[in-house]
Image 1 (tube, helix red, strand yellow):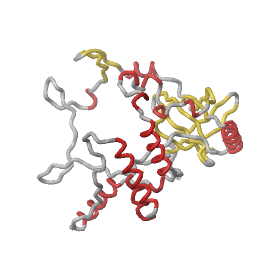
Image 2 (cartoon, rainbow, N blue to C red):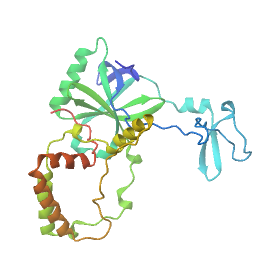
Image 3 (cartoon, rainbow, N blue to C red):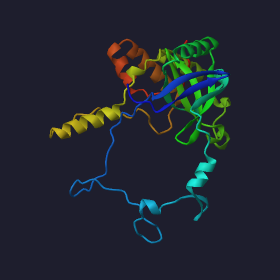
Image 4 (spheres, rainbow, N blue to C red):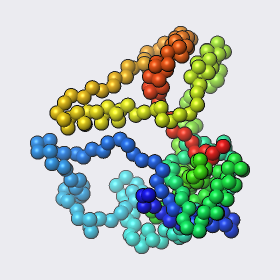
Length: 284
């Protein structure tokens, strides 16, 4: 098992459960280094003073907050320590709420919580309570000097802690102009709902793949062997010109019905769908 990111306890009421925090997601796209084109040597990043045009050593750097254009207030190590919160090593559960009340935009990165020695019984008890209540825990945790809002959910037999955004981090919807429902025609809505019904299915995340990453890795492996890679091409099915909406809906519905009669086409269509990020939910 990989080393834990953090060790502490889940605290709700007077109950504490000792746990370890492990990453639940991983970055799969290849990472690239910048190289000097002439000799393929890696390029280092330099810290250059804008006024002097000279490199600055790490020990000569300070952190500054730009409170207006070109003007800064400098913060010292003591300033950051004064602002730091108590590192209590505790996920403090403040509320248990209905997950349907939470906007998907609040959720960020998920982590697994694994019980440590002596915490197995409390872990199982908390997991069962969350499952039966059909609610999720909302609390706070301090990681890497910063306080995070977090959601505690159950996925299969695992407690999952998902970092959340605070309310003031969400961009206000009111600044954008969107059409109201008065522009929806009933016939168009009926056809759209029929198309939704034909596209309806169960959530099976394994059938959605990152075709761009696959193409990149094929190119990389081919270049290592001095060959040319064959990559997957996806046709542009989203014209930018204004089209007749009813006509497009009818065409989409007819195409879907045709694909329903061909299992191999159904699988190809599924691979082209956009990957959706599921919101954290407790297991049923």
